[in-house]
Amino acid sequence: MNLAFATLVFGTTLVVANLAPTLSTKGLVNSADLIIVGKVERVEQTGSGDITYNGVHYPRRDYAADISVDETIKGDPLPHRFILAFSTPSTDARGNVAQGGLLPNTYRVIFLTKTASGYKFVSPYSPSLPASPKPCGPNWHVQLGEGAYHKVLRWLLDLLCTDSTSEEKQSALFVLNWTEDSSAAPFLKAALNLPNVKSNPTLRMSIVSDLMYWKDLSVLPRAEEDLFDQSVRSPFYPKSNLVLAISSLEPQISIPLLARVLKSPQPEERVAAARFLEYTNSQTALDILLSALGDPDREVQFAVMQSLGNLTKQHQWRPTTIDSDSYWNACIQHWREFEAQRKTGTQ
Image 1 (cartoon, rainbow, N blue to C red):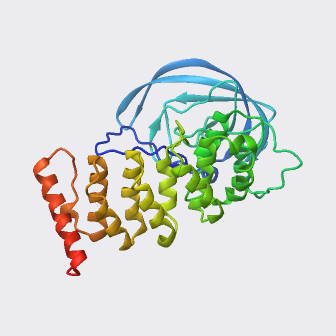
Image 2: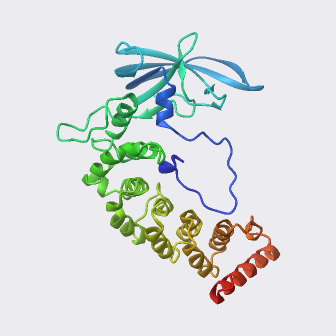
Image 3: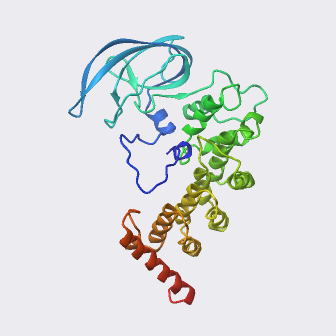
């Protein structure tokens, strides 16, 4: 997900089809023969037909995109006007099939690889990334580097400090990958103080989550304020992501905060705390989880027992569904006995 940009979905049953590979900007940069930045002026359908991938037949549509190129980040420089022919669906290097394409009147960083007849998208899941047609300006002093990867990040992150819309700013943040893109931290730290970012809960919580995951504890007070203020809400960025970022901190910092979240009036936040207490890999988390066995919400109880089972390696007492009452009650009873043993010192 970029986990750093993915919306987390909690629950006991989740069916997902056509899972996309995790977005990796570094992977796109490294795999591309050509990376260009510019405005997609027009996209016209030029044909149609059928195509077969891995024995599966798909209806095919062919397009021509008229692109005004402002910079060639990687590869041989292109003229200002470039027409890219592409088809949907298409495959990536691993044979994954998706419908990725380009939309007219958008400004994008586009990742292409050479073919015998021209170019194709490096990834049909992520054929391009959002970009800003304007730089941050002369008063912006955060530098990211001169390599292709850092140039891509700069075009992306310039959306935060220019007059782009909130949705465009969100699209830039949700692209960031917690595992790979920590070099964006100085830029995000500076952007967090911009009025139109600071006042937007979605943007603010997203940046704070990124920075906490990258071990910047200076934003911890902001994280606590947003997390425990019930009036702070975002339709696009659940507080569960803040909870996940907190769980990545040292246990002496993360566990007290997660214990507080476990008493939140919002069930989805208690589920997140119960689930992510496991990630602290701390025995201190056991007593906190055991204290939540009596939570009135069954999905919270489910998350509690899942984490208890994983922390103690007692997987047989980790329920897989909330619907089997007899096994559910047996699991609860087991963990009650486990709790009693811990209190008497026999565990």
